[in-house]
Image 1 (cartoon, rainbow, N blue to C red):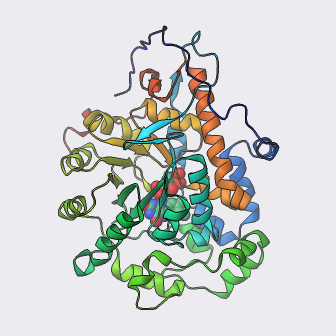
Image 2: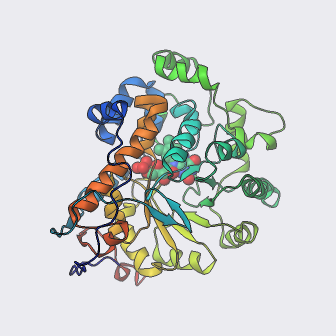
Image 3: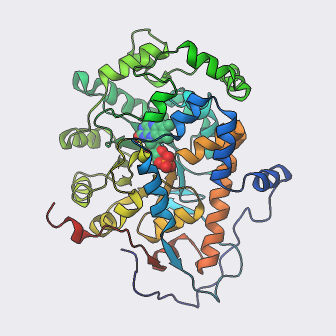
Length: 424
Ligand SMILES: Cc1cc2nc3c(=O)[nH]c(=O)nc-3n(C[C@H](O)[C@H](O)[C@H](O)COP(=O)(O)O)c2cc1C
């Protein structure tokens, strides 16, 4: 639980090393930082540069986007009280997650159908994450294989799975074996998309379900040389990871039909137990918002929980994940690692999440905007922004390192507490 009453911090801790990259900013990086200092600046440029359907797919939420707004407002309303007189240089941001060292508690959340957002997305994400040593979660509905991703990002690759329950989870279990053989570092089961919901902006932009490449979409793509160039470079995006199971069918239309037929539903507790048996590495459950589910997941052997509302994309009445976090941290803190996503846009947001009991903050849209704005250079730039902002936030709050965020005094008026769940 975060300390919401007092801040007790020893003042005799020795000064840590400086953040390793503090003095190594290259001119190109500096230029990007001046032009695009925040995720919102990248979003504005992505909106201009992407075809309309691609931007709407990436950016739109369920309903009237109020879930997205709730995520954003919830983060923005959280205050952290600084203590001065300690830290004199930018603190390092490195952390351990599931027993592995990373340069920051920041990760790229899984994205499905990303070729629609930006062709080549997975390649650019994987390379940037490996270079920066932050986790990259490959979505199972991806345009490169697990094996290709593992070559690009051997040290930081995590894999996300949806539920493919037909034939006794034949596909899911095969993917688990492939992940193990490829050296994937963690497996994430997505739990929060039991049914298909509608994202109005996506529908209005001409994206159909199941997907169909219509003339309207083709014409829309023609308006974006940036997007077309990336497609020429990376090829037409296909759901490559699933192709071994699709009897030779390769088109996007066939793939989406296949996914609809084979996938769907939320993993049951029995199924979670099967995946726990099959996968020996760190296993995460993505989509936990209720503390009782968190408790049960931990009892089932889950190592990590992703507290998320799917970025506001499922329905827009779900709690902001940052508001759900305190009750979950109170229930299972210390027994499982906790990642928060949905609305994470800056290093300050990552700091807020950690101060409230998380181990890391992941982002989806911020990284997708970075691609839409800058192409291949985007994800690396977004990681730099997160890290710089997190280091500055630590310094500003008087923390020598990420761990010390946990003793910062936080005011979080929207927080769910365990008392809110006594009768549910
Ligand atoms: C375009 C898009 C596609 C996504 N696809 C998946 C997916 O295939 N699997 C999954 O678990 N989550 C998926 N997500 C959800 C993200 O993993 C993450 O939970 C969400 O983006 C976090 O919120 P944020 O976008 O506000 O950072 C997707 C999100 C977006 C924006």
